[in-house]
Image (cartoon, rainbow, N blue to C red; front, side, top):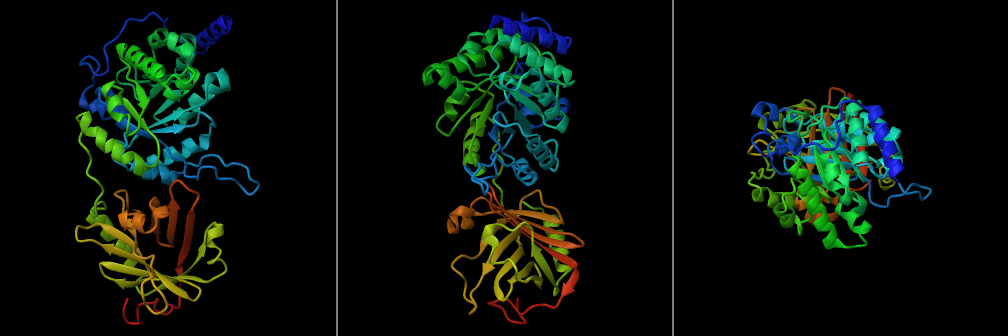
Length: 484
């Protein structure tokens, strides 16, 4: 075993220059005056990085897969996690999230990194969450593959890379050499103005014994402990693993490096009391948000206001409605895009949208063959926000039991594109739809209505050709030829 680690150290020396020996002196912590940067420099980092530079606590979450757990293909093969640009955009617009933790340790997927980076690009750079990507272990993937993946993750635009199961100081030095080879401007005690986050994780009994030497290796940002893996490696000794993780935190903090730790609503208070500077949560956004709102005041940070009906600015919502009103009285034919099995009732039928009622409320009936039960209702609220509701009626004009579901536009909307997240009424009416996000796009040539149900495979999309008006259909059920 010793020969193997000596080989790793030799490999590290051949891959990089400027990595000094292990016996470096302790440096001031990031929270100390000597380590803090001025406001201008702090604002050049993404959200969590800016906070860590100032010695503060950052809250983040594991990026949830948009594919239902256990989903399989037609042959019964389990499908891998799914991460999309749209999902990243939604997470990136959440003011409660300081960082996103994309876990690719079990299955490296460069396309997932590309999707996340692309989605986050639409978020204001000064406010967007830090994107950290955990890659497979050096031991499992090998030095060459790990080196290539570190370079690829950073080249694709991620804000940082996480290397799990670092087992010795030699392996830590090898990991640092990969960052140097990628010419990464790593934020560290020796480089307080760096812009890339590099985190090493201790998750094994042997690594705990070597934690001081691992912490002494220069050139990375955070030293953290994997409590789940360590507990298993310690034979299920939870209290012993917690104590070991505390020692890992202390070893890193003594050399100016904060530490990240997973937390739940139950363990949050303890994690903060132990001064972990990265709080990592798992679950859906709906599950994570109340934990963060509870945690922020505990670390003397302001809780962002909850989304309200003025989330979209008055100007933007008005411009979006104007794009719809430009088609007032006209109808257009559409088609399903990548229909799913649950959409069979619509397949083969004529799909027509008809823009009606063009005031502060724009009603757009969606006809499926002879079925005139559906209307999309876009309403500009008194405070200037934009709301989408789904009005479902029976042929006699009475309301369906499932109707008036929808939500408010998110603050990232534009005159051409709005996202509407399911509101409380929707969650109460249709519990499975509590994670629904509807996207509506209006361009010069196309109207697109899309649905995605976060945390599942449910997707729906129908596109309409705005360059070819068709004869308007009869009024939707519950309306007349002269009323919306």
